[in-house]
Length: 283
Length: 325
Image 1 (tube, one colour):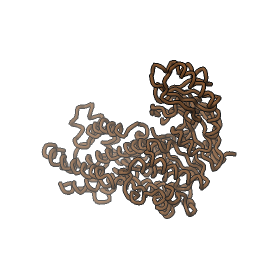
Image 2 (spheres, chains in turn red, blue):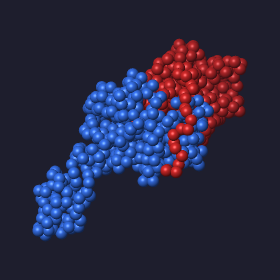
Image 3 (tube, one colour):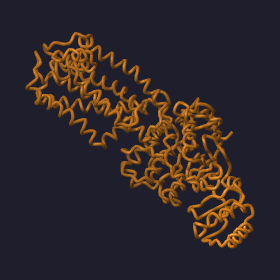
Image 4 (cartoon, rainbow over the protein chains, first blue to last red):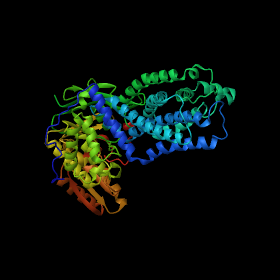
């Protein structure tokens, strides 16, 4: 190395981005960019985000579509909101496993010794996953349109439905990010997602009507937040038809429920995440 | 005041049952290299993590360039660089992208961050590899990128936690060259290492740590002088003769007799020098003990370590989970 040029800088290096909001935004963007690069270079992740929704739309519309009947609406119309809901809920868990992975690899220690905004690592993480969820949404909508899904309340209402799904997924990303900082390995998050979210998305109105379930499951399904999310999207897409809806508040007023629920999740989990991040270190 | 000052640092783990730091004091003058030596679990990594703002101590104070680490960690982060035991780089980014990201997070802005990244990639001799994701890098290359990330802003203070652990000798020499270059530019370095040769080579001052405290301090030469003069080493041909040799060495030497690299090799600290060797040789010859080798040598940091901690430095035990919690 004696012949190598000096590693010291030849010029002067001056910080140019001020603290406060500009710093937070700049750092948030840097970390988002970093996570998107990672996404771009891991084809398996893109594949998962693209293929899984296609698979679910095709399976449910083509395999179950002929056997499941929902009063007053076409089953393809009915189940699309369910698949949207399920996909964004699972998509949000990616924030958790990715935080756990970053901790495991020690890069969180690097970030924590830099004069960056601590919230930026989490913002960049959840932003990148929002992008991933957007991609999934577009793919699902195209696949859905192909198998006959139609929205019946006009474009603004449909876009509001998509926006609501993405808002919920973004808020839920912060929940999984916190969990990701509390577990030891990314696999724990994936397993937990499988064990908790699978029943949660299935014991709901996502794919079938809860009224046909055993009583105890029906009650569970009617109060299930996933049901509220799906019902909200279904309402905004105009896919409810004349199908009867559970009489819980969350199903009677699904849009406002999801809106408030998402905001409350953010208000609780953003500060918790930042506090946890400031005290976390690789293991 | 020294650029790094720590007083009475205490840090416990597992709700107080493990005391990683137990009243540790440390002082590093500006522009010097301080080496932290100690067995695994002694508290080296914890010390570094407290000083580079990663963990908060339960008690004690620390300042970096006069800035209180506990009260104003963000201001400390502006002037330090840190490189940990495990290369903390993003595997999916290229070397260049990693460096640019770090520069941007030091708030240098895109332009300066890019220029500095390019400059570092060249200086670290990684131009070819700089455009590929770190995933495919060798261990030595990863470490170099990691160190490059730590010095993006040409930090005034650099923390290096076992920077060369697990590296091949060539990569180690390369890293040593880089560190020496930085020090020549005025950077203050706090370095932990398990390799005594590394401390001997790089550190101006060494603090030996055990059980969360500093148990000895000084330059390498001062520490060597502290543990006494020369060492007398004999290797017997027959293992059955070790008992007699041990008796002779105990009588002539000034301190406990240690086994060397083989059970037939014994060594003891001595006061005299050549006379002691003569005495030992004639006594062993009288006892008809056949020798393979005999001689005297100057003490090394290994001896310092062994004498102070009662344990050899490069313990085969590499379980440092306690420190990394």
